[in-house]
Every structure is written in structure tokens, then in C-alpha cells.
Image (cartoon, rainbow, N blue to C red; front, side, top):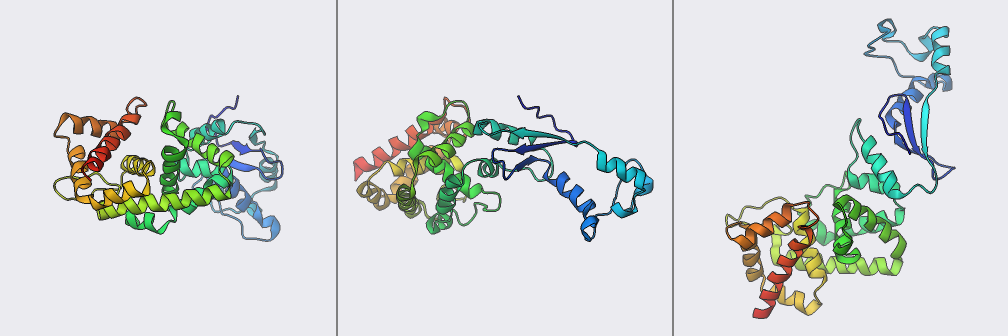
Length: 303
């Protein structure tokens, strides 16, 4: 059991690799200590500022601190908690998440990137950089905090890993998908995934144009890109063959009209769809896909 109580004197490391420890919590503190003591290497050290106690030392550098006090600093113990090899990745994820309290908090995808094998992130990055995906989202999905890679992960989760694997929450579902990618997808499979993703995003863009992966309304207002809308349409299009996707593109006006009806919350069916789309409850999750599959079947019957 790892104590994940946040304390300034406690540092947490992923020590799975004996040659290279990964800082889970405490990087900023470690860096500050290092820079304060860096005068030993002939470099400019940090200056103490904003001290709550011992205020007389504000403005001091490490070389200015009296020797008795500096000796106490050098002899101060720091408690380090190590995650040893064999610690389950989901345990690591939860520890990262619970300790993610100071400075700029990591996004869930940034945590996954840090703890899961690089092979998983490599595939997600390739998908996120797809030119049609960037165009279909109007370049509005941020890359700086790996939100674009979370979209990629959601695609792999619903299209390949399978929504039947969703157990308690979406975080666990996406974590399991990261591990599944690493365990099962080789280079050839990765190339196949990229081609499928490109074709399916391209189909969605041809149908919805500038409204791609957004809720639709009769007011024609362009709403933000929506993760749940992205999931339901990408899974639905993934399950179709090329000819069926072509038929949907040819009947794009009807698809958009039917999807607008589902999003407008004016009928019992649309209210239930919007509820399923916005709910994080496990029992609602499969329902959102059912509505889109029904919509597609209706359109294809008219073709």
C-alpha cells in the first residue's frame, strides 16, 4: 500500500526502471532544490523569496546562508516513496491522479502517456495528426495537453477494443485500451488502423462538413466538438463497409436532418438520446450507439 498523502517533504517515484526513475509527484520541488544548491557547480543559484518564517533570509542565495543552517539543510531527510516493478498500471494511474494537486495539473491523457508503453502513444499521435481529422475538427482540439490523442484513444476504444469492455468508468475503459494497444497492435496493424481512421473521418467530414462531430440544432449554430458525438459516429462508420459509407455521403442531407432531430430534445426519443449522450453512467453508455445505428439503418433503407 502506498500512502498518497500530499506533503512537501514526500516525493513519489515510479521506479519500474532501475536505471531511470520517473517523478510522479515532486518534480517542481526537486528542481527548486537543485537550482538553489546549484552554486556548487559554479552556476547562478536561486534566491530565497517570500519566506513565511526566517524572513531575515529573504534575498539570500545558498552561498549566503550561515554554515550551521546550511548544514541542517544538507542533513534534512526527504521521504521518497517508490513504485516497484510489477505495480499494475492502473494502480500507477490512480496514484498519479490522486497526487496531481499542485502546479499545472496533468490531464488524464498526459498521465496515460507518462505511464503506459510508448507504443500506445505512438499510434494515438499518428491518428491525431491525420490531416482530415485536423480539418474535420477545424483544428479546435488542443494538442498541447494531448486532448487530440484522447480523441484518438476514444476511437480505438469504441471501434477496436469494444464498448463491451466498459466496466465501472470511462477512465478505466480508456486505460485498458492503452494497455490493449501495447499488447496487440503491431506495425502492420497500426498502418491498417491509420487508414481506417482516415477513411472514416473523411466520410464523417463529407457528411457534416463544418458541423462534424458536433451536436446539431435547427438554429444552424456551430457548437463545440463533442467527445461523445465523435465516439458514436466514428464507431458507427467503422462498422460500415465502403459502399455503405458512400451511400451515407450521397444522402448527407437526410443524415444531417435525422441527426438534428435526435439532438433537438423535442421528442421522447431525442430526449433519451441527449441524456445517453451526456451521461457518464455505465448503463447509458451503450444506448447512445444504438440510436445512431438506428438512424443509419433508416437512411440506408431509403437508398
